Image (cartoon, rainbow over all chains, first blue to last red; front, side, top):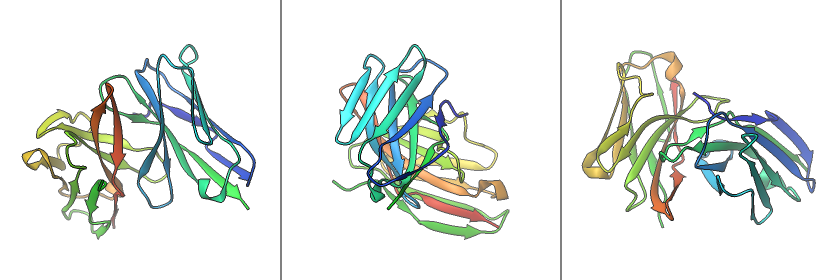
Length: 110
Length: 115
């Protein structure tokens, strides 16, 4: 069963704009991870945030986590055409197993 | 460092036929996972191995799916007989502990089409 729900399901923006995707989950977690999947390719790990962290940065990526609301957001700043992909959040309750959401399809228009 | 290898990349079979997928994890990764990703959905865990033992296969349809991990390294996932609803991408991932956390590394996947 899917643990997380991403919002929106699809997002289309202009190159250079910022993209924000949200993820909500249902049960307590040890950590939450974001992955990117380009068309026809496997999943690439982007960033991991532990349950005791509130914000994390990696290059143009910023992830926030609000465990009281059971939600997380992924912000991609200064988007590029190469950022076009599907983005998934995945939760780990400490069992080393990931439960993925349905994903957000991001399209960056030139 | 070589990534997770999977083969074949694509497979087309008719329903009721059998099919097998192969995965070679990153060297030294003790944990191996098989996921099923249906078009438009997120990956769903089918089975998790720790070395050559099964940790979790609660979502594996055992009447038709089977998996094994030979000598704690390579793994094969088999479907017999296949159904139309088995059409999906089958992803293999491996992980190792780093600071108490387990980042999973995914292979390119095998796209299965059942006709």
